[in-house]
Length: 189
Ligand SMILES: [Zn+2]
Image (tube, rainbow, N blue to C red; front, top):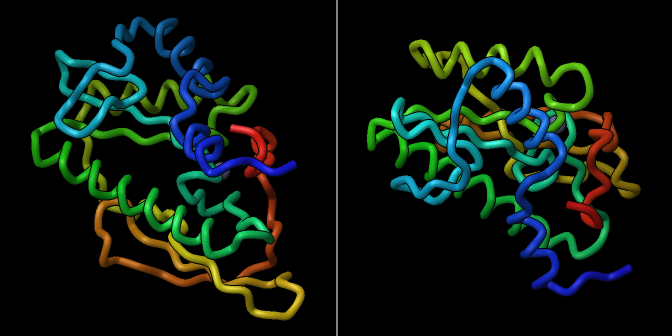
């Protein structure tokens, strides 16, 4: 199956995914009242608490470079390479812009919301919403992947810190280390 570029672009904006709905449901159960796609100084985050000035994003593992689950497609490598770089750079700038405008930013990986773990993540998110948000540890995202052998079974992954575009690290690992169950990139959102 081949997708046109506009199809692929549209999928990046996929909203209302199952993991996102799971998080919303769990937050609601915990008494957190939010708005959806409310405009803020940098875009329209998935979940917004305007009173508390907190924006919550649910990031897909494939589109946003999950450090565990991102696996580069085997075809149209240059296109996907650029796409990943663009998406991750945008995430970082968006996060920085919001924080500069005194907004709290919480970004959750879709894979963290699969099945039973949604409730636990909602507890963490609720605590972050209500408390101080002090990020001390880097939050890594894959921004580029290099193949280390002919068959592309081993790869070198360049990761960048969500809070600092200049903080990077490199890890080597097998290609398909463990794809998130929710994703079959790039053919589903
Ligand atoms: Zn993931």
